[in-house]
Length: 181
Image (tube, rainbow, N blue to C red; front, side, top):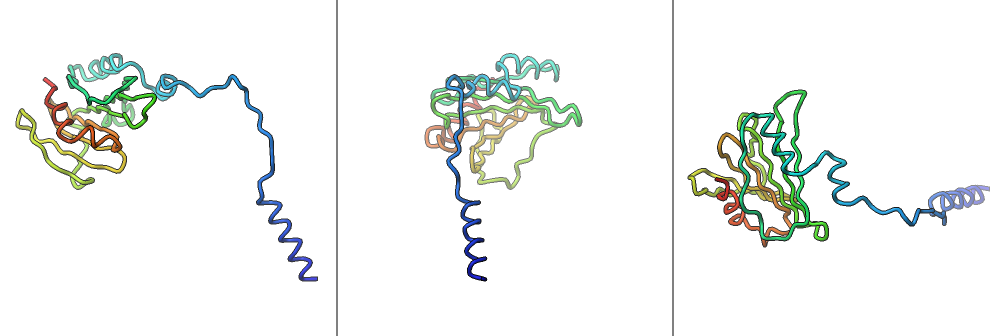
């Protein structure tokens, strides 16, 4: 009797956990959203629009780097994050991406110095000196590498996907930081 109950339990467990051959129907006209749709769905717009919103909010001009990494990008998006609840985490984020090469991912985040992020003891760090004498911290993280520095009462964070860090070195990020006039 016990063998029979164990056998039935075994059969029921196998039947429960073994996948069945269910059929799923898909519309052949369905396609994944475009990269533009994906970014706009989460609040991104043109970089120019985002910069204007950021400058209008702070009533101060912001300067962007004149150069960018020499890896190819297909799209550029911007977003102004406004912290309406605490007014301490407002920042501008500009993303450069490549639709065909996901690792070609570069971003520039800018926030006011009064709300800067403290990167002390975060990640693997190395200090660089910019042409204007300011210090910049290069931080090696798990997904992205960042160069963080201050200029004109803004904190800048230049970030690049770790997968392209052999092409976009810390020295390249320093050159990009130095291009902000």
